Image (tube, rainbow, N blue to C red; front, side, top):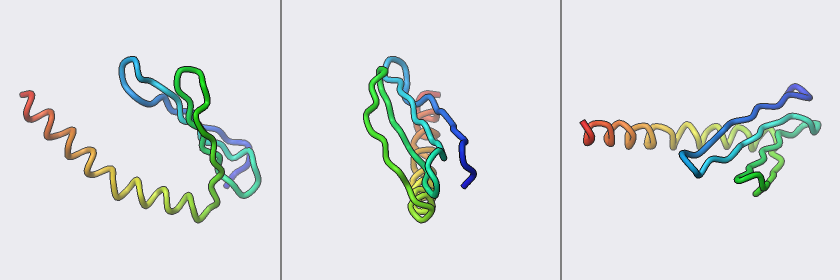
Length: 77
């Protein structure tokens, strides 16, 4: 992991928006912070192995979310 990088994502919808921040400011760790309404809800440090587990989980769950979104679009049409 490259040191000193940071990515900010705006998440949620409408009035329930928040932020997810990923950073590599700590050696050998990816820091994941979640905030909502200006308040930090949680910060966790992930090892390289835990980052791989998170990737696997996202790859596993994302198609289900996409399928539900597509289904909602078909129902609305």
